[in-house]
Length: 208
Image 1 (cartoon, rainbow, N blue to C red):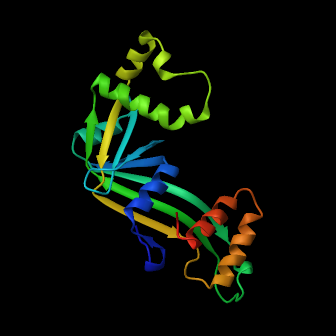
Image 2: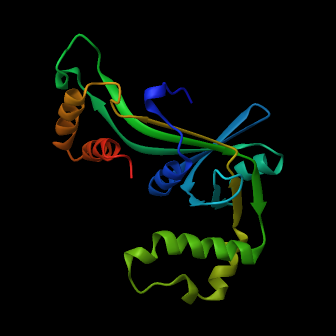
């Protein structure tokens, strides 16, 4: 991913934190002239090579997992807040508009998981991550086995040990502080772009 120095993000701890926040990701593979793409939730863990480990599952009917069975590398793309930036928000207007955005690319080999117990554990972790924080009476553990077993047979698990991690956080870091403040203010006025404004404030405060 092309990233000028002003926008490059290299801290794997910070990038993993962002990947957990932006965890509905895009999985890309390429094999024998064919590119396949799937959108799916991804669990982000420590370990592996030190850059982290990604766990996810897809429908067994999805042909993409066959790419990984044949040895293709995975590229997993995490997308953050983004917004159009008008020149009208800058002090000096002899320049051009741009687009602010955050993106992280994780690459690595894939280990496939077919074992029913391992898949059950993966589904339970996914539910723990996304559903339990919402509350409610439904629990994965209470679902009848005659419904769980077919579901386990219909999915494939994937584990990616990240071999390369590239982060790009393009949020006007190359502009004067006064211009950044005006951009943040303008973006905060609209619900669709307020997340980008808040992320700019987060970066200004050190990114935590």
